[in-house]
Length: 420
Image (cartoon, rainbow, N blue to C red; front, side, top):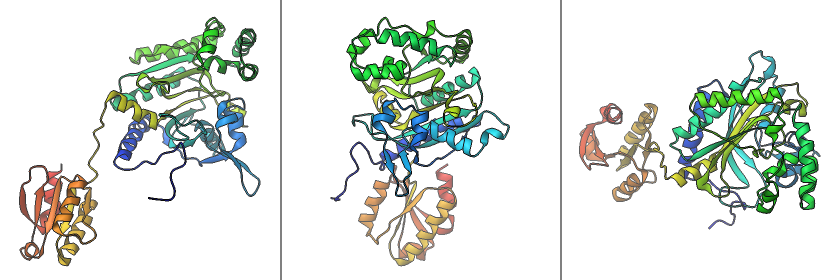
């Protein structure tokens, strides 16, 4: 047993389970790649101030959960707790918004880090696939991203998820609501920390999960009653576009999400089979974030979907993904000449697009055939000195048990035909 273990709250992805995670990432990104989104990859750490300004200094993410450290050179850095601020920073730094083709559409996949109490569905290291559309204010863009996420989940076979939808208003109407909500919250019996949160960002109090707090919020003023005409019209267009495309959603007037940068459209994907940690992904519009981090005005919208949470949702629904076999052909050489010949054929099969593996380590027939069975290969190639003297190898169908001699020169043609 190793002296070392994975840090608390993290996990290792290993075969065969890792194949499911790869399939989930592929399924989530596929609709994006088909819709004009290009891939972006950012560093695993950024300047602390990027997240303090963008995510919000009052958020739990920044105040309690962010892994921050100082380098030997005195730089204050943080492991990225989310993807949007990093992607927007990268787009601004590369001047993608000046290329004249707005919105800039980007998608990404990677690991993120938050210091939280570990529990099922919530880890200190987690994986997400995200998408950002930067530089356009258009209800159709908001609807597009929600539709693409819905499409991705349905392509995986998920059915029991719900889409929660809300509008957070903009810089014109939200301050009025903010003041009304603060007045209401200061009249409640709340602890000092919650009251401090109410002073800094009162909307986040609405997201408090404690039953005693939620009970007091029953008569809280609703943002819908304070939305300006422009925000009402914008939100209604998003709703109409989703409805027209047959994408079901639920209006959730208390949905605020945990990041300060959201404006107008905000949404969350939840799965009731996951218990208290029901969110599998979410996002929204963040029209002011670019300016918060020192860029120009660039209205934008995006989302991030949790790969870990999505895998748990698949398990909750009993959905087993159809995963391609890791190995289609397994070669078992008996003797040095057979090793040379079959190794060359395995390489040739791989070049022809056939997944093939080889019995390494000079095992005998019995041990090598056990490896062939464990590999899950559909076919096994076996060759000894007598076979090669006749110019053939033995091709065994691992499902039917049938075995036939195949000419060495025909191995690739025969197998590619059988595996079509």
